[in-house]
Length: 334
Image (cartoon, rainbow, N blue to C red):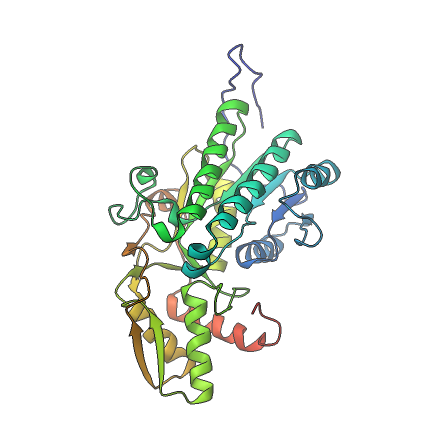
């Protein structure tokens, strides 16, 4: 990969970089490799023949500790990086702890990206979130909707941190000419998810709620909101495949939406979860609780142009996720 020297103005323009297959023997650091997305990326990279994967748990490396992050990069010198590490949570957690979601994620991103620049990471993918887009963005949401309207207030702090990450990727491209990219996934689910009653996203929360109700014989389940918001869901194994595909086939300053291109209502997804886990009782809706964004469907045209589409159907993905949840009942994040 050729990078031209700095100009007198202090900017660097990217040379004629053309995405190509990554070298399977090169060192590849997956930041957040034990999380939902990171673990799926790790599995996919192993399956694709990568032989020098590097990961550190949060106990081994606190990415909020700048000195520790720089020491780690100095020691390992990865050639490729996927930044999947983040503090994440559902509506309740985001709304209750906005300072934590803003501060922790900003520090993680700045430390990892600055260290990656200093130690010459050639190809890097930053993972954001579809919550970066305005609450009332036209649907389906195009990449150019970024920064065109007000954010959803229940997770605006997290969204601002992720927007800062996108802008840092763009700044690195302008200043250093490095062909780094950013991907914005829709709502993800699958093996390794957080099934905590207070910290999980909507789909794992529904799986746990309906599964426990089915096992206990409860006559009803109560969900937050009205059930009318529409959401798009992508299996995390599809997300992992999309990440490697983008690293090998896409280059550009604009973030790329990653999703399925179709959505369902929360009520519909609840009915599907109930069917998959075998719950036959009633579903009630607590309309005093917030719904969040009315609709969040991504326009995935750019992803399709790059040659990738989702492969795992929602019901099939749910069944495999429920199976994983049952198999790991004693070890899942509570």
